[in-house]
Image 1 (cartoon, helix red, strand yellow):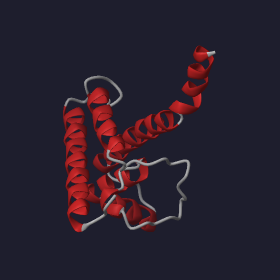
Image 2 (image 1 turned 45 degrees about the horizontal axis):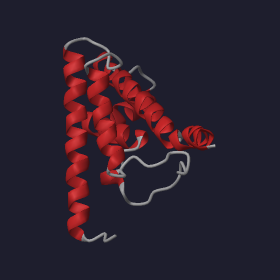
Image 3 (image 1 turned 120 degrees about the vertical axis):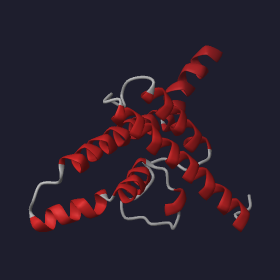
Image 4 (image 1 turned 180 degrees about the vertical axis):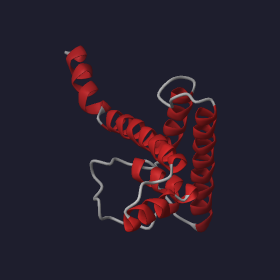
Length: 147
């Protein structure tokens, strides 16, 4: 499989489209004052997960190292990568640093955004864990059915 510049640009575009869609969905849930964990938001977020997973941008987090940096930040849609990107877009990374440095509380609006990110991250991690382990639990069922 080739990893030429065109393919890299396609992956970046796909990642950006997914990220923009998730950001818009979070905004809709926030505006409606509804949790992301209920439909229609959960279903739509799961569709974004499926798309990201099927393009290989999520990966198996059981195999990744906390310190690894493989240079794929632009297309890293793992739970960590997704939340890192959204936190950067919303200025939460800097707000958290400033809050820690100044030993002050984060402003309520930014704290609410942080809570939304935690919700996304938790669901994303759960879905990834389940999908990565699907074969482990279903291959024995298939083998038992064959015998």
